Image (tube, rainbow, N blue to C red; front, top):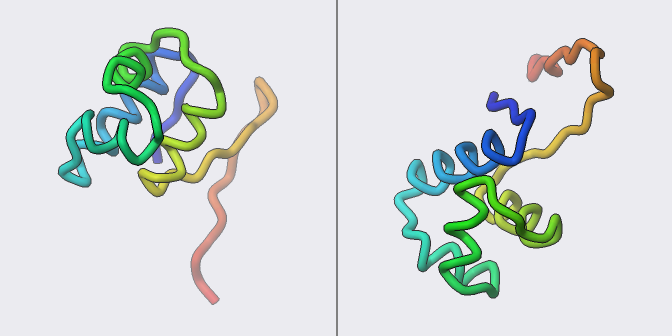
Length: 80
């Protein structure tokens, strides 16, 4: 599980997930419908729209969970 507390953390997570899939920035940008500079900005923690960030995360198979600041997050068990 990756945690992101800032735009830079989010960018590092996107880069890591993209590389795990073996995708280039160009490929991710095409699938997101943006240019490569937008993906570069996202991965650096630069200003991009939340819509683009969420689209990239979804394409990369990430699950986004919002947790109230100071709250403890407990992962769900996959046992049945």
